[in-house]
Length: 106
Length: 106
DNA sequence: ACAGAAGTCCGATAATCGTCGTACAATCAA
DNA sequence: TTGATTGTACGACGATTATCGGACTTCTGT
Image (cartoon, rainbow over all chains, first blue to last red; front, side, top):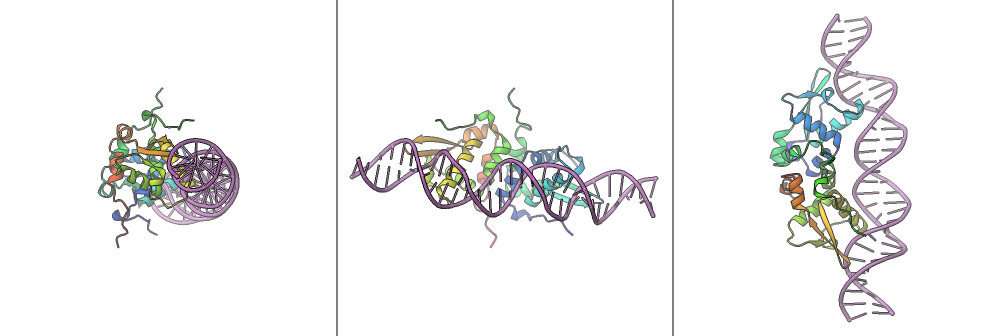
């Protein structure tokens, strides 16, 4: 059983934007962007259950935002930075450059 | 009755991304970006009913993507380009630069 | 062999979303 | 005033979504 990953030229803008439009997933992408190595799912600071976490990683993978590679019982996640940059230049950078946590202007 | 528009510094990334993650709304934003004047709702090439159209414009407005100003019976729509650029530099450009219609690689 | 760890898969549930039709309000032109 | 135009408001409907718990699979270490 191989994990579905869309090809670089198959990425759809609306799908990618939707994948990035959830706070949990946005957090995952941000953590991933600042990691030098692929990270297993458990390494993320996410406050939802395991099964919900699986769901979010699948949404990101099927949108083409991340790559998941199996290693033992772990699934290593990495950003598909090159593919995203090639298909939607500047998009990922703009998303990552946005204030990390929209401070509520106290 | 005044239309709700979020302040420039209140825009939330996830909300803006969600507003842009629908094909209909993406089309509206694209048409708006290539118009030199604010456009009334009826001027858009949208293949959904009037009420659905109203809904999409509201989502865009409440996310802070567009501004709506009443003029007679028309509601003039314009992109909040400056506010978006200030809050999320490069985001709108990246979205607009993406291939307009994801050609299905015939 | 066995227990723990890492994640998935399978419903289920409540919330949100996109869509519609119809009724309505406001303006403008004749 | 009458009628056309522009768009909203109000449900309603089906589809999708985010969330969960619990059972399950697969690997790893002892």
